[in-house]
Length: 254
Picture 1 (cartoon, rainbow, N blue to C red):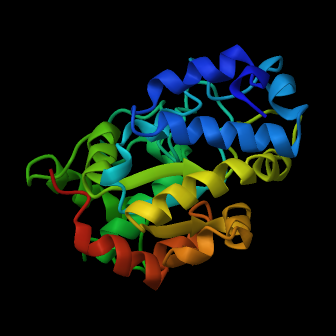
Picture 2 (picture 1 turned 180 degrees about the horizontal axis):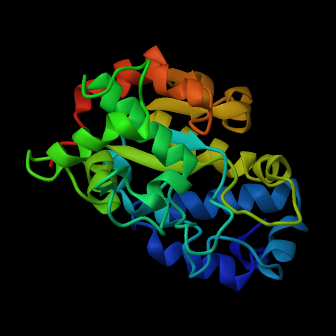
């Protein structure tokens, strides 16, 4: 397979990726086309999220800066929310409100639970009480104690720590089960992880059962791994492995 077999709209989306990634992503697309020649043409003719040519937006981080690969399930199923970056909800601006977390954060269940996990790890919340009432004084302090205020700042902090924020399925289609699209992207992810294994050997952070599929990839076996339930589960808030990984990074500090 060559790039001539990959639909132009898919190729055009490579423009949002850092130049260091483009040859690798092209090779990954060729692997997808070799495994299932019909998949990419059908995708290009279909309606999917993210929109705006953001299919490879996660790869804006240069390859050599990647220290962690965080893998979620797939894009949010809402056009305003799906950004092409794992669990970064485009509908969220401010993280806080007077009552605690902002309404858009509370709507984005995975993000809400991730925020609560960070606050528990930082000692600002008790695990046995992460209610709105407990969050209200945390939010009040957050407006004046050097805490980040926006989702863009949280994403910037993750990027600064070297996180490549990927989804196991790069697209969401309402009429296609996410696990089916995730399966189609496995050859692509094998190429991506193989390139990283040869260069920066980042830690693979797997969230949920769909992301867990990556464990079967040969390239994944060459990388250190940590996994947990998906953060849309309430139990994620108390996950010790996630607290140990993210807590020391102080991601809520500006």
